[in-house]
Length: 251
Image 1 (cartoon, rainbow, N blue to C red):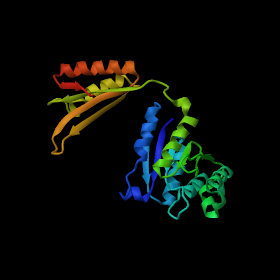
Image 2: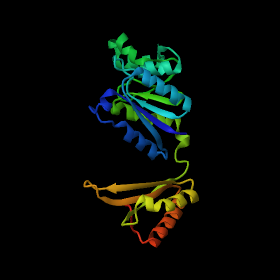
Image 3: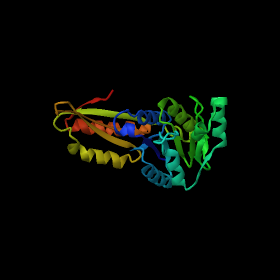
Image 4: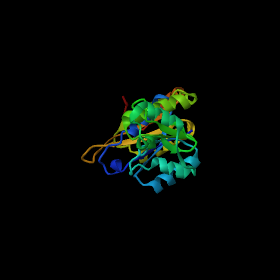
């Protein structure tokens, strides 16, 4: 299964706030032997959010959506999700119980709007303040506040996707190459050979440049099953040495 993220909010696109969801979700997935395949950033535009959700619901990916599930006029995610699913919005009974447990006698119709979700969803518990998110068809809708959203995302992963965890061990190793013959274009044939001989590994090449525009080194490596990684790196190192390219292991 592919994992994706939708991060919603004008404040992120304008630069008023720095996104903290992408790195955290990538880390949570990596801890469980999984990988984030894509990320999309959207503003507070209901038609665009609905259009994006129609596409991702049809694709069948596991999606984490952050932001826009509140009850203020600039929160559009609940309504956009209902539109994408072609259902109405209803007060979810489990969400209502959580909200009433949180506010007690101070529960109001306005606060209950926080539990008005697309018909047919499940709630996602919120350990921070009991205002839940919701999930449907491998899409998980979480608040924009990291303090709430990140524990909720972790709960979702451990509750619904544990069978996918660590299906195979994965390691990453790389060489740092320097010198006249260490450019990517000069090593394309070696990269193509590694990809052809080890199709289950993920190859990466990351050139580094200093602030003055001078090239520093090329990080060349692979990620995947440990034995195959060792074999690929041995082949890579031998070929690099044969070509007289200076190298050292990336630490």
